[in-house]
Image (cartoon, rainbow, N blue to C red; front, top):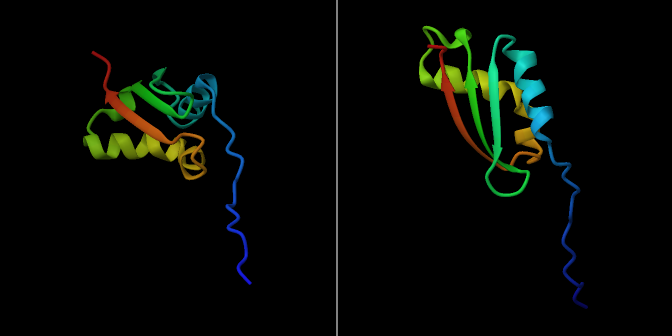
Length: 89
């Protein structure tokens, strides 16, 4: 006897712009954070400006931001992320 195909669904709680900003600011205190929804609340473009990026490679800058959003990325509360990092001018 064949069993019907049952897909497992999981509830993914979306992250608000303000939560993203607060998470990044907790990790990078002096940061200016701009968050833009690209497609729904889980496709984001984030720009982070911080003096903590001085002397860091672009990869290290991005790793620092990703570490602040680790759980949200792992649970897919943030599904897609376009990230820009800059130092203040």
